[in-house]
Image (cartoon, helix red, strand yellow):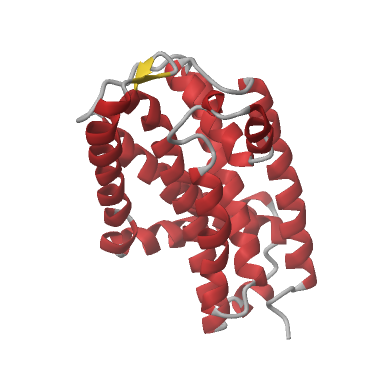
Amino acid sequence: MNAQALFTAYSTIVLREIRRFTRIWPQTLLPPAVTMTLYFIIFGNLIGSRIGEMGGFDYMSFIVPGLIMMAVITNSYANVVSSFFSMKFQRSVEELLVSPVPNWVILAGYVTGGMARGLGIGVIVTVLSLAFTQLKIHNLPMVVVTVFLTSALFAVGGFINALLATKFDDVSIVPTFVLTPLTYLGGVFYSIDLLPDFWQGVSMANPILYMVNGFRFGILGVSDVNPFVSLGMILVFIFVLSFIALKLLARGKGIRH
């Protein structure tokens, strides 16, 4: 395929994904906005007023970057896993398999679609947060790079989950038993400096900790980990998961029977 044909295939997948989640916006865009607003009210206003400062900032300002990143992570992941698995279930994915579209274009198209939803939710949550606190960006390039790479990483993760899933229950296992615990224990609501040394070491094994803190550094200028280490970790995870996704797709794992 020439460059024009590759771009046409890629853009077709991306536009399909964007139209899919915007068409059902009451199910894809509205619930995260409502959920994050409740987090702002309960954790930020009610509980935060009793906690006081954390990391040199009022509690609301401290948790906003983490909540934005949590919304980006969950929605980037959910969009790809639900969309691609639905195509498997409906057997419409076979149309992609018999087409001359390279596997990397298929992966890139779905990942970009997942990023569109995740970043869109991130913008919505950011706008909502302005009703509760003021955001002063400390390092804009760090904010942009971290959120884009994190969104891409979890979109790839959602693609792998969709490939391996054999039934609808398998789609919810990873978000429920892996993503949610790691996100809540990833420094969204607290600084790991509050933990004993042992648990600080355990927390360093949580990849989401690096993403949340990298994004928090970009907005507030404070982080529990080196922000450049955070970027390096995200890039390594993207490379590894993309390699795995392409290998599984080439083997037809979960697709060819």
